Image 1 (cartoon, rainbow, N blue to C red):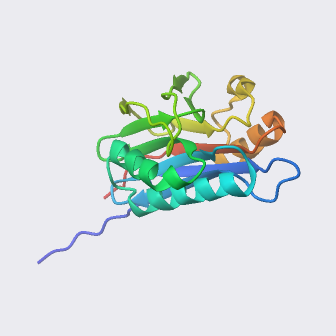
Image 2 (tube, rainbow, N blue to C red; image 1 turned 30 degrees about the horizontal axis):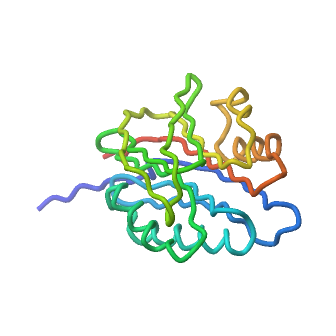
Length: 202
């Protein structure tokens, strides 16, 4: 009996940067990167408002996403909606990567934003608040290639950052630069940069 050895590599690399609203001790903007066989889930979560209550809502949402990361995105958001009904609620952007199909499934509710590029595509989300008023949910599936870059930002980041994206920049330094340069300073802020690397190789 012969066995074959496979080198499994992560299908994505990422970098994240965040800033807490001045005067607050807890950040209400959190992220999740959860890898699983054949792909991974990434998310940016913005708890409504700021401070302890916003952080509590975002923490509960991230924990729920982490426990059920391989589920369909619509099911995931509905789970979060039920869990967050006793909190202020949150807005969130989710993307699930499938390395065997070289695809990304996207779903967003509320103000958190997603950009991929340049050349770039703005990934729009439906208005609403998870845990309070959930809109009709619909996912979008787009093809991805090695090197494609996804940028999640919360509303503490100025939209003008999209004109200052440098695709050759490593995700970590890109996230830090965007956050430090484009943070509004009037809200919590988070930047999550995800670069697709493809699947494993035999």
